[in-house]
Amino acid sequence: MVEQKTKKTKASVAEFLKKVEDPQRRADCKRIATMMRQATGNRAAMWGDSIVGFGEYSYTYASGRSGTWPLTGFSPRKNDLSLYIMAGFSKYERLMKKLGKHKAGKSCLYIKRLSDVDEAVLEELIRESVDSMRKKHP
Image (cartoon, rainbow, N blue to C red):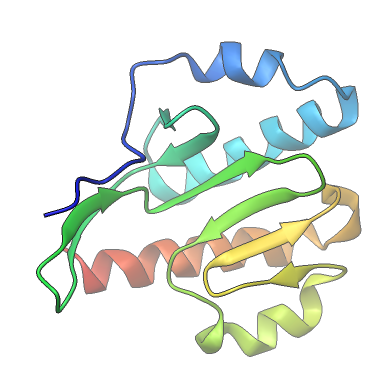
């Protein structure tokens, strides 16, 4: 069985965020962290060396592979802020239409800066995703 590569660590989230060079991006990260903490009720934790995660859930694939992952999280990547919306986006079409400038993958939301999106819509998207994940993975 292949071991999960990205795991929760004891690294400091505050120290990680201090290293975000651009002041606006650092402020955006702090605001996103606040949204995610409010949605989950959990403190931030580092997952691997670049993901700030909140809460966690356990999963098992049909193949038998299993692991643990954050309920939601984000990473300040080189080109975008990557937000992990683990419930995916298919159930949230109405929110996605109102969100603002973004790109989306299966469970990743990519934004350049927080000012490109409607923060209230983003907060609702995060909250609904966390609620969905908690129902699916109690």
